[in-house]
Structures are given as structure tokens and as C-alpha cells.
Image 1: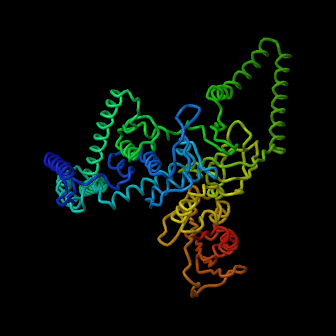
Image 2 (image 1 turned 90 degrees about the vertical axis):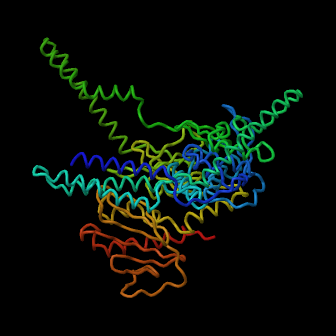
Image 3 (image 1 turned 180 degrees about the vertical axis):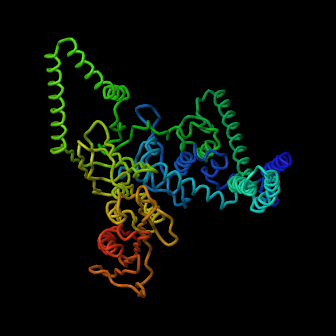
Length: 590
């Protein structure tokens, strides 16, 4: 029976591979004579399997070719290519991911209206991983809407694989049904479910459809034609001894956006296919621990401070901790054995004195720490999610004076207000690195791109405030009874966030913000919250109507002692006035 089970599994795997290879029964018939059309280079990079590597940079190159900004200068180690925002931008619509990229350009360029091209690969709002994840999702959605990608397996084929998989699963169960095997149905059912999940997981991933492959073929053909034209033009120019530069090649190192008659856009498409790496080289990021800052009056590369010890010093310190006491006590014992007790006593006295001095110095630094207070500008945001501890929120700030930029760990609530480009006032405890930091002025953007930046902000938030700012981590921790970690979650009607203990699943504090349509409706079985206009208690929730928004604060899964004095209702009564005080200043409307 085991041979039968193995044969049926092999047959199912063969069917799985065949269904992956065979094209679907119905496919759109692409127009082979259609010229290269409106598929942006980011979509082409997705079809070519290069979205993660090149999608963002080819979008920058394409936007430059379309006139959204101009590339100026010659790339070099001391003088990068500058991106200059023109006085007037094109009157054309932008795809969501293109608008996201242009809003990033606007913030990085600031009021000066110019930014080094490498600086555009840094300083992302919310951190680079979150920005790139949203960018990829928007590009993928565009490709799906255009019909250029399809699932590797249709729903019918996935269902067929699940159905046929019953045969090898049943054969395995029968093979294990002997007197010395236990739970044959469990093994058979587990294998059926596991292989079915594998088939589903592979099947729902996407690949280029027939129309998508036709798009790739068209752009490859266009790139080949441009290369032949460039070669022919170069030969003709050399024969005439004109020394002219055609500028139409697909692999040159010149900055995109300079070739005429659509040549620059074609270079961006060639880069999306992986055939012109020089096109996106001008946007290559600086080293990981270096940032670009314009806070000092001109764009400069600035190293980020390092709070970690160099590895030789760290190893030496570790060895001293391990072997120092052994050497000390061994030496003292040896001195006593060698009849040098007087020297041993002095060594012990010196060691005790050094220890006391060290303790006194540490106590003095703790009781009277030194502080650094400065104004500056946020250059970078980073976020690290920790499974077993609190999440880590950091910002890099240029104070305009130090040779290095500050690398500061800040509370999550403050971090969400510290977008790159924000001007801040900070106070840092130099002993324990505790930070008090407050935004002073929001990021400035060039006037021609102000509407793009505002439209992107409206698209992201709908004018609603971040729930993570309405309730801070400390306030959430007081409700859940211990240190809390926050996470934004999807909401069908607005923006939502949940707070949970760092090492537990409950209790949960949920804050949801949505737009209020018209006048607030009277809710049955509610009671007003004292001191809060249009604030009501409704069971485990509190509802606030203010600033044309509805805020719902709710507590789930809390034990009576976990929500502080008075339980859940008292916790909600404490929170709602804080939310009511912050909400009006955080709401933006078009």
C-alpha cells in the first residue's frame, strides 16, 4: 500500500506541475501591433520580475523624463546630480504609486525645490520598508487592474487539486491502517490539508498574463530598436566627425531626462527591463550610516552617530569582565603565599577605592546628568518590530552643529509626528539617552508640488488623525496594566489602532477614527462622559463626536484589575477627555 500511496502522490505532483505550466483556457487576445502605451515603467518592472530592485528608481527616472523634476549636473563623488523642481509641473494625472513617489520628492526637496538624486533613496515617511511595501502594493494593484497579471492557478484548478488530493491522502491512510500504526486518518488528513495549502499558496501568487507578456515583448522590441538606432547614429556621427552624442542608448551612464523625443522615457523602460542600469545609478543610495541633509543651508552628506562600541573594544571589555576577577583574586592569593601580604593589602585597598570612585561617578552622572538641547530637522525615520519586547522607534536628526547626526530612540506616539523634514526641538539626557522631542514646524514642500503632497496626504488619511497620536503608549499602558505595544489595523470606515501588552494577547485597547456624516445620532443605552461634550459611554466603549469625526475607544478582554482603578468604565472616562483635547488640532480637511 505504501507503493500505491507514493505513486498517487507522484501523480498528484505531476498534475500540479502540469496545471502550473498549461495556460488558462481563456486568455485576452492582445493587439500585437499596438505601440508601447500607457503602462508605467514600474508596472513593466513588475512584469519583468524587477519591481523590488528597480521599481522605485525607474519611476523616478520616468517622472524626470515627463518633466515633474529636472536632473541637473554630472554625477561625481563630490557633486551628485541634483533634482530640481520646475516652476510649473505637467498637467497630467499620476497613478497612486507615482503620486506617492512625487510626494516623497516634494518633502525631500523642501522649500528650496532641489535635492540630490541619491537623497531620494532615503528619508521615507514611516521608514523605508513601510514605504516600499505600500509602493509595491499599489503597482501590483495597477497591473491587476490592467489585466497584465493573473494567478498562477485559477480557482477551478485549485479546487481540482484539492479534490484529486483525496486519492493520495486516502491511500496513505489505508497504508497506515495496520495494527501497529495509530491515527491513520490523522496522518492522511494532515497530508491532504498540508499539500492543499501548498497548492493554494503557490496558486494565488501572480505571474504575467498573455497581455502582460505581450507588453514585455513590445518594450523589449522598442529597446532593441532604440539600441540599433543609437548604434547607427553613432556610426554616422563618427563618419561625419561631428562628435555629437546621440543620447538615445539604453545603457548609457548619463542622467535620464536629457534625451529628446521620448528617448529619456525609453531609457526608463529599458531600466525597468534590466537593460539600462546606468539610468537609475544616479539615484543610488548613500552608505547605510550616512544621510543627506539640507538643514545647514546646503545639501551635505552627514554620518550618523554610532552608540555601539567598536568590536575590538567590546571584546576587550567582555574579556576583562570574565577574566579580570580571576586575575585579581589569583594575584592577591599569590602575593599572600609569597609573603607579600603588605602588597596584597595595598592592592585590595586600591581596588576598593577604584570601585568606590566608579560608583560615585555613576551616581553623580545619574543624579546630575548632562543634557543636550537643540533645534534640528528630522532626516530619517526607522521602525523595528520586536516579537518579544516593545517595538523600537528611532529618528535621525541633524542639529546643524555636530559633525554627526543624532540617532534617537523616541516614543511611538511622538515618532508618528516626526516625519522626515519636520523641524523639531529636542532635549537629550546624555547619560541614559532619554529623549524629549517635539515638532515645531511641519515639512516644507516646493510650491509647484504642494497640491501633489496634499493629495497624497488626503489619500493616505482622508483627513483623519492617526489613532496612535490620540492615545499615547504610556496612556495605553495604564489601561492594559503593563507596557503596551501598538499596531495599526485595517478599518473599513476609517483609521484604527490596537494597543496590547508587549508579551500577551489581551487586554486590547482599540481606537478607531472615522468621518462623522451630519449630526451625531442619539444612541440608546448610553451615558454622557462627565466634562466631555458629545462624549458617551456605551458598555465597553466610549464614543466621541468632535471636529466632524467619530472616535470610538473600546477595551476588550480586560480582567477587573487590569484596567486600573474603577475598571474599564473608569479607564474610558480617563481617556476620553485626553482624546477630546487632541482631536481638533489633528484633523485636516481638503
